Amino acid sequence: MSNNEDIGQRLQLVRKIYDLTQRALSRRAEVTNEAISLIEQNRVSPSISSLKEYWMESPCPSRNFLL
Image 1 (spheres, rainbow, N blue to C red):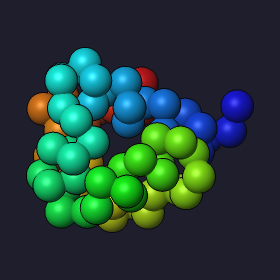
Image 2 (cartoon, rainbow, N blue to C red):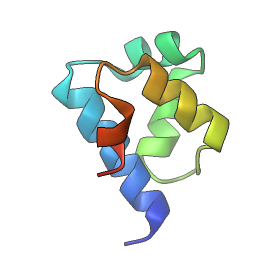
Image 3 (tube, rainbow, N blue to C red):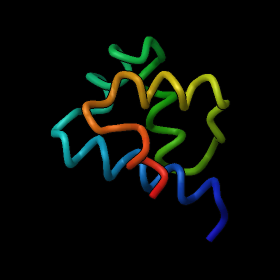
């Protein structure tokens, strides 16, 4: 499993733990829900700035996202 796959799976896991839809997270992070979907499917790799936005808008502490 590559690092990109880890990010997609972790984003989806955190989103589901906190009962966020892709659409809800996309609105909070100001990206399209298609972007969230593609990241979770490991079809695209998020930029560092995008990851920062997801972490900032997620209810989980950012330090837990990559653990």
